[in-house]
Length: 247
Image 1 (cartoon, rainbow, N blue to C red):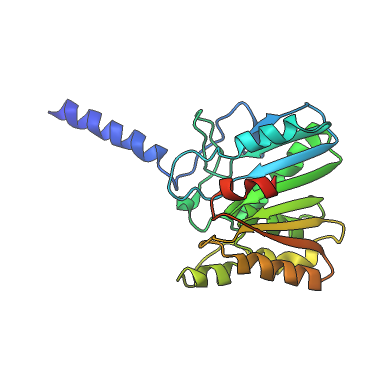
Image 2 (tube, rainbow, N blue to C red):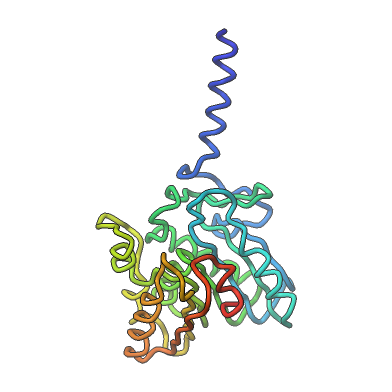
């Protein structure tokens, strides 16, 4: 009986280690600043394209951006593309980024954004890139929107797909209240260089990050003299429905 209990206890421990919300070390052949990534295209390239996934709040691997990064690099010359796994996330091959996914809620806080920016800097140097463009979906877009404004011109262009660009407004639209730590891209517009191109893409039927969030963000960006435009396309919140215009 005791051995059965011991085996069950060990099994539960292993299960808990695999659950979201816990901190992990980066376990991948490719890690940048603790974040696992998949790379496509040449080892050295003039342009680096970075793809960043959303919360995947339903659970499971967060590698849905891999095929878009691969296709992007394959169809362009002198472009390397990487798809990063945000802190604590993993892919179906077992590669995992260091840190915690925060329970897959409230995930683009100052610490995780700093980690992501550090990974992008490291990858820019690794690939010898002169320019960095980045595409993020949902919370990944939120993180990149902040990085565009607080990282000294690290990003030369950014595509924000289904972006919760104003976190208080986004949470209010979903019945949420205060007590969050995620940062809002709208609060960092003043730091976005005038040379950085911003495109916000949202599905007309998106009932999570509603089109008004992208429209308001771009209106504020343009009022501040930034190079920004918005595209409201057919589709909902899932990246597949907005991928065509985004990529």
